[in-house]
Length: 277
Image 1: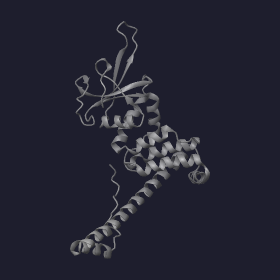
Image 2 (image 1 turned 60 degrees about the vertical axis):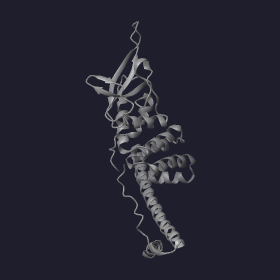
Image 3 (image 1 turned 45 degrees about the vertical axis):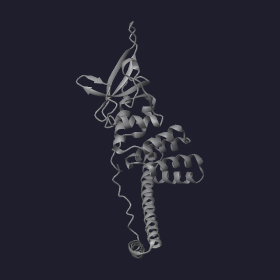
Image 4 (image 1 turned 180 degrees about the vertical axis):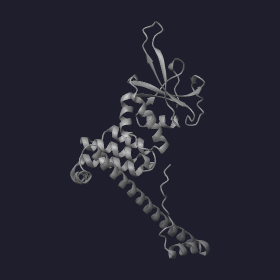
């Protein structure tokens, strides 16, 4: 979770409001109690909203700076010139407006600020190409804003593995319990798959009468594969997978993925550390 400073809802409460509210609650008649509670609640909510607004502005500012950095790194020009160009396009270019709105909304709503570089990178790609928001952009933004720093590191660990040259276009990711040299299907009661290792599984033709043979390769060790698999399925980046005997087992421990999708996610995530920017 983020270690950002939480808004202090007591800061800014006037002494008179706080004292008056507490006095009414402590010793006044019923109407005074209710009125005092509402007064205090109103001030507290106002301060909370202000604190959240301040955090949103900080998030948006960090995201904006990262967006400009990504555009500059992509060869768009000097930082000052790029910032002026993007700001000018925001006035009348609906495509840029829509793309930036997706990105900044994700930055403000993100569970953890460690995803801001990835959010800025995918926004920069669409801005540079003049490409309107599409289902991929919208879903990858929604996926990123639900990731913790731990989830982000896990997703990056999965995505970088697609560089292996012999991976097929479509394969399964199966989180399995390794005991000795024999991975096996875990008990479904395991919480988030902690302690499991993720294998890439697919079938290859052999030309033999017994038919295709299963290939099972160690893929990655991540903290909570069940949680990450759920998120990938929820946002359309994976489908329910089947494994086990006769390929009939389905559960939280297996998903079906395609290489192209993981490659696109890999390019968005980059190699930034997962610490708070």
